[in-house]
Image (tube, rainbow, N blue to C red; front, side, top):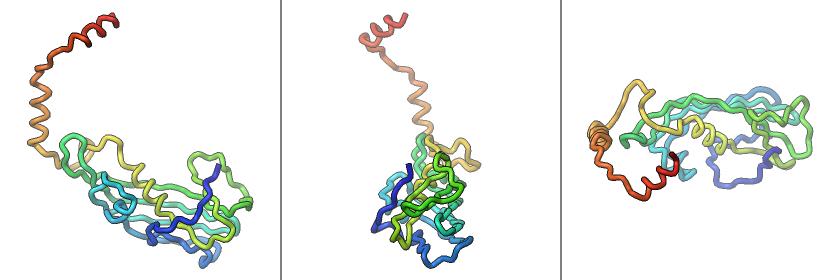
Length: 185
């Protein structure tokens, strides 16, 4: 089921597309997002960013296809040593905008790889900030560390402390857990 776009005041204006001013056909938009963009969405995990965003727009009479490309990096805290790590971002996403009540030819609305958004019949613009935000965040790994990066900015003092904790082995067993472990046998 397509999402119906309603007026969303306050979204960053840099990704607002006034499609009524565009002729039918291909159009290209480019922008860059930084930490201010993520602060707008109140994201406290992102500590820095430099992502180049390109929008390829194909405007048709009853359908607007927006292909979003994002490439750059997002700085997040390493899950292991708490240092800032620049995670690379290189992704793309496809969004199809359709006017409410109109039927676009040859569009498979059951395709899970494409987002469908219905625009009100009186709409003159749409904002892709939310799609840009979500697309970039989905490209960042769930486990954020520098294992796969060329340069490893690890905090050696933190890693040393973690190794000492792991090697100490002074774990005292809790008799309650020992009883439960006996049940597994």
